[in-house]
Every structure is written in structure tokens, then in C-alpha cells.
Length: 310
Image 1: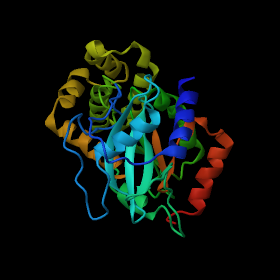
Image 2: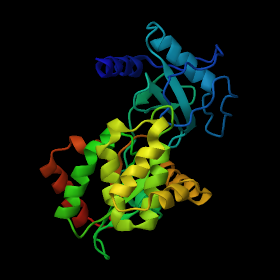
Image 3: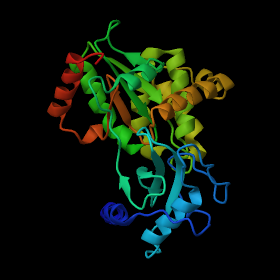
């Protein structure tokens, strides 16, 4: 019901969104933060050459459109120039659900809600170029036809659901390289995700073969892990999978590991990853991979292999 309600709200918002510049107020807050938002009461985003709307202006428009329902909350994360010249891109979320984009022209009274898609003869080249920086644990042949890069959160139930599908694809497409990038969501959503990312990163540093078994074990035991007991449980799972638990724990607490996790999340952020899992096939972003029928997913992988580098 929550998703249906939110969908209806988005339809309403798309039909009537208009930027109001008359009122100034801190934006409403959602309890969960899927990305780092501008703090409530923070200085509004400065206008640029594209004359971006301020946080207050966007918030006023949202309040005018959605304020009739006290059960609706939202958070504005970022206001920036869109990839299409002349448009502003507002990244926001309603009721702690997935982030959405509002695209609007300066001074306009209408907006588009949705997603800009790569387009053209070689639409995924920019993403592919950025993904040359992918450095996580990998499996596959030494001269892969294409790369499939997954940005994952070990506390994420959707990532758990996707993992066996990606493992099956790895078996069915040995000519493809699969790369796992850590992308723990904020602690307000997933309290122990960062700790799990640090432990798993270290497992990969110590024993690349054990990494995949360790990740599977964390996913399998998601329901039995809590922030207060995460260290003990992650050490226990390390031992079960043939790792030196104390060595992994010491590595997990090191600044070098923190730097690697930040590098991985920065890479995801540069690709506008804001949900997990997010998978890139030959640079093509694939959402909801666990919800795609497997035969169709295989067709998509083969299609990208046939269009490698394009």
C-alpha cells in the first residue's frame, strides 16, 4: 500500500509541480537517508549560471503539492544542473523510498519526474569509462568480453536476492568478468552495512577466493546480524569460511580499509548510484536485476557481449 500511495503521489506531483519562490522554510525530513542530504536549515544551494532553484523554492513547491497529507514526508538531497542544458535536476525522496529526479527549467511552472537515460550510437561509453576504475574483487576470464560491475550493500535484502542470480550468470557466461564494489548505504538505513563492507573488503584483500564464500555467508545470515553483535558474527563467519578472524578484524579497523570503501562509494556516486544493488553491464545500468526473468537477463547479457565497447 505504501508503494501504491507513493506512486499516486508522484503522479499528482508530476501533474501539478510548480516552483514557488515566496516562502522560506527548512525542508521536511524523512527518517531514512539513502544519500547524504543537505542538512535541515542549511544554507540553500547557490544559484549558478543555469539559475538553479533554491532548496527553499523546491520545498515550497513540494509543500504546496503534497502538504495536504500529514503522513507524507520528503527530503531534498541535491539540486544541480541536469545533463540536458537549461534544466535543473532535483534529487529527492518521498517517505524514505527510492530517490527520484525532478527536472525543471529555470522560472518554469512545470516539471518532469523520471530518469534521464543514456542515448545515442554509443550511449554507455561515459559510464564504461568511469567503470575502468572498478577495483573490487572479481571473477571471470583474464580477457573478458565485457565487465558486469555490481554496487552492493551487504545488509540490503534486495542485494541478497540478487546474489544467486549474479552467481548463476557467472557460471553461464565465463567469458564475462564480474566485479563486486562495496556500496554500504547510510547507517540510518542499514546500521551494520559499513562494518560488513569493511570485513568483506578485508576478506578480499586476504583471500580472493574466500571473499565470495564470505559474502554469501553474510547474505545468508542477514537476519541474525545486528549492530551490537556485528563484530562477533562477522568474525564467526570469517572462521567458518577459512579466514583468520583476528587478522580480518584488524584490517577492517584500519584507515586503509576506510579509504578503499570510500573510493568504492565515490565511484558509485560518480555514476549516480543511489540504490542497491545497482548493476552495470558493459556500462549499461540495470535496475531491479532480481525482478527480471532469468532468460531475459541472459538475453541482455548476450546482447551486451555482442555490443562490447559500444
